[in-house]
Length: 276
Length: 322
Image (tube, rainbow over all chains, first blue to last red; front, side, top):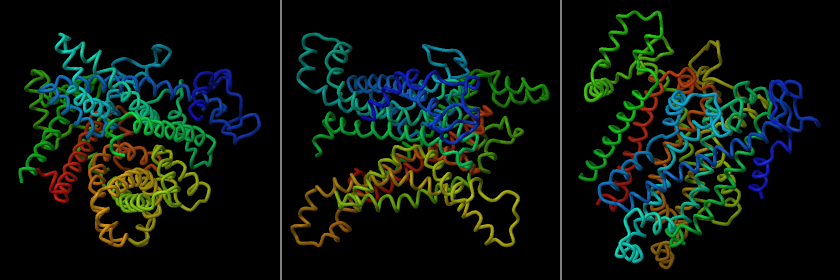
């Protein structure tokens, strides 16, 4: 239910609330409380908050999706390779994974973001997404793959001992072939379950990164809206309409995805299932 | 003893790795320290030459520059801040440490006591009214970014009800008659930030403790204790709690890294003059030495906290030592 609603908001914002308003096309007065014309009030330059929040859905969802893709890809590859190849490769990869698990990755993300931004430049558009946001996607991807890798590695370790893997090896399949054709299909359900949880985390991380000023004002996500609200001091001014709707959206999405993710995990993760 | 040595060695290895990551980032950074200085017309050629020598920039990257960096870091020399008139990074960070420790120490202690207590109770009375409400609230708190919680608390208690001050650590420009008046003002400013940190963490901790205690209650020794006719309150206190607390201890330590992220944003919301606001100031000024200093300091403290938790765990549960 919740997820369908947000999917609709993300897919067709223009049909629902019109094009994203800018300082020029703003339709209301400055920082007005909710009225009939502006159901969620306006921001400090008169843009309709409903318009901004609905458009924010697309940006937040898109960043979350792309970041999840990178995270799951990195985690899946590292997990399968570490688990399957074993030996020294595994030892090194497991060390790196542990390192990323312990590290305050958010602070690392804060350092990486400006560095990556300076390397690839900001302001241009890449695949319809502004590069500032691409930076966020990359940074979230780099810093959050570790837990996925750990889960996939554990599963690969147990799959490796199964007879069908031996059989494939006896027929003469190479390690790459076994990993892609035999191990991967068997960890895919685990990856999917994990991806849902990763998505919730990615939305949260994106929100936090945007909140501290790494977002893009020209493609505002929910986090960016919260950042703008914080900068003009909306909480102290009592301008609740500025940040409560976007905040509620974040909580709902993260909450829904966490519930779905945990449920899927219980269903699909063999370790969890055996415990109940 | 060997357990202890192994854990300490692991922690040292991790710290070493962090320092090296920091070094690599320092080099990956757009513009070496000397180039950034050279951009500033007020910096004399002598100062630039000094920087070049200090970081060994005319020497090869490995080993000379790495060694120079490692030696400097080990001596607590983290370079100089770009934005605060070239003060040493160590000094800048040290000045912001106190407020952060105060805020997070208090928040963490409250969260551990209340969160673990709530989790234990809801797990014990699973399905009861407290469990339903408590678990729901915990899940919502868990899905909420800390700063959003902070903004809402600020909106409700400071700008709508006017009960508490909105920002800073003390009232600006106020002079105090006595130490007590100062402490009172500080306490009023502390309430909301600490509440934010504590509430955010309580969500996590109570969910964690709840599932841990539910799992423990399914164990055989609990059934044995029940069969022996031990009263249920005693089973909870003497049999279930100590065992359920074990995973909680290590998970709290593991989660510390995420807490740090929340910490930074809470400070921003309340304008708390700690490491978090320092990080954000450094971020917007692209003050890389300070950012890296903060990263180093926070990572090392997280690693040490993990080591500490491991050692406690080893003390509480002899099985992990082998």
